[in-house]
Image 1 (spheres, rainbow, N blue to C red):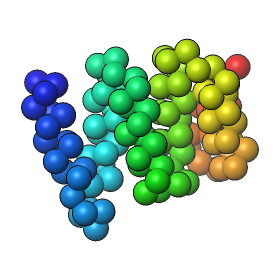
Image 2: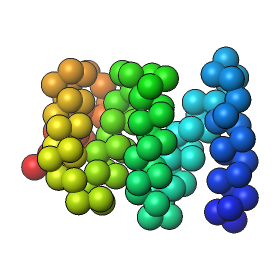
Image 3: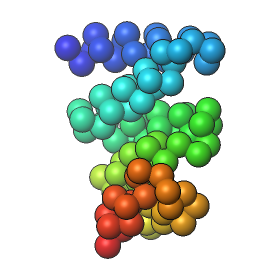
Image 4: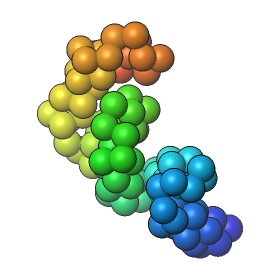
Length: 101
């Protein structure tokens, strides 16, 4: 199932960004790679989402989780701190704050 889902989500996410499904497909593709332990790929995909939506705290949070899985603790800390320092009202901010410690 993973290869089929990956193929479909990759195709949809490659569509023009005006496509209403491109951003949700990018998020889903990042989650799919994360769930299958492909943390470097997931981190890259969430980074791609941040290029499209720089203030997307959800992408920052998942990128931080990827960094943790890849043994990049300082990167994880910096990403989580960025969430709650720059976007304290975002729904991801409390989780980012508590996950930092």
